[in-house]
Image (cartoon, rainbow, N blue to C red; front, side, top):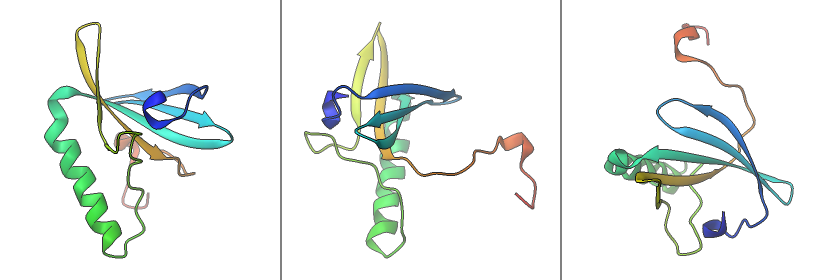
Length: 105
């Protein structure tokens, strides 16, 4: 987690679907690390741009955290597999599986 100056952090797997999601704990602060296959680069950038737009227009959004080199998206290659990493502040709350959502959820 050196790219975000979070050395010696605890990393806990949460789930995998289209993304790999991890909880990162560093000095009693919690973060969410989302790892996404490289083919989704443009979609992730559009998502970040939209979150920033909402934030700049008065909507309280969880915009990603910039890395030490001022990037929202970090790209890595592991075992010939390319991924992108985005770090967010952790927000307390529940998680709903899409197949269990109803009009009341």
